[in-house]
Image (cartoon, rainbow, N blue to C red; front, side):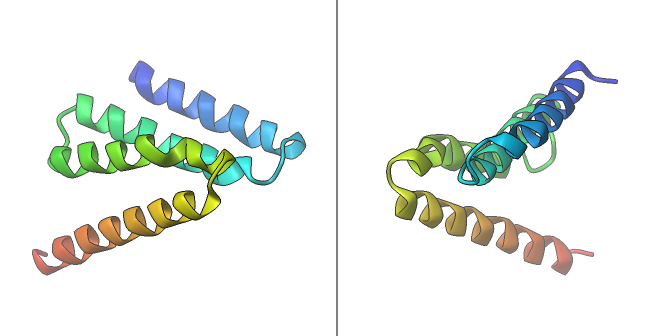
Length: 96
């Protein structure tokens, strides 16, 4: 199995364990960081949606740390990337 995928699985498992003792606010950060890492792996493997994934990763990475200082900015970024992925899924459903 690809090392990047194993690394992501390890990150997700240790994040899940850490969340038991960490403040609840860390959960959304860890999930978005996991998405960013998955995007990176998919980009490296030249996924057909590479441009979309690069934009998604950039949006997440630019604002993911705002959760510690500005939760409104963080939530706005989450809403934006959710809309982005929703639009992509709608477009993909039209081509089936």
